[in-house]
Image 1 (cartoon, rainbow, N blue to C red):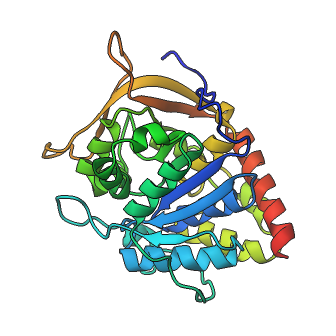
Image 2 (cartoon, helix red, strand yellow):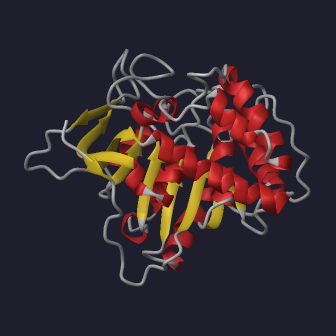
Length: 323
């Protein structure tokens, strides 16, 4: 399959040098590790929005609030959004992430509550105020983004980029065909992929290679207070061995924003299956674009060593700050 190292696409001339990101998430163990990566990086985090996904909205929001304080993200607003899918029954992943969504991780209860309003309004108004400046990073079901596109189609033009963790061109994880975030709201995913922007899709094909091995865990263990999040998260999410371990899927989306060259990407046309009896939520990916407009840039491989050097480096900087 032809491919090339990912590079940033041209953006508006007035976009700032420091990348501003708005992260839509459903924490979630791997969401927590992704937020820790963002906190230890050079990114300017302008907001967190939450969606029902790995666990119910009340829990994803509570987890985002606790993570904001634990990671010392300051006044970054946390705005709750959609509790369930647009049309179908709710799909959750508590069997993976535990009853609270954070597995064996225990964080202090947050002292501050969420921002007023709804995530969809926050997304629209934040992009309207800073057109061309903000990269959307979505690491949960795409319900909030779909509703934002429906409310204000110009968000497609206002966003600097859209990077998602979700989908796959080869296989599923929640079932044989579909990755969890896509299965949780296929109609929303279909709206997002059909909206007219180019979706950078970091699917299971690459995220399943970003695994916490024993060697990686040993680099996390000395990181002081931060290790109290990283190490239990890894252990509660899967079995860590010398050769394999749990994949920290969502951190790949943040890593892409920081360094796209870690990923090999291929333009593609992606359609989301919404009606199939056995394939609902499947991201049907066609790399033979021909005369059609590619609606996605699909990651096909990851420089795993470079990824972990980037991630651990950010964690080390964050740990030095947290003590």
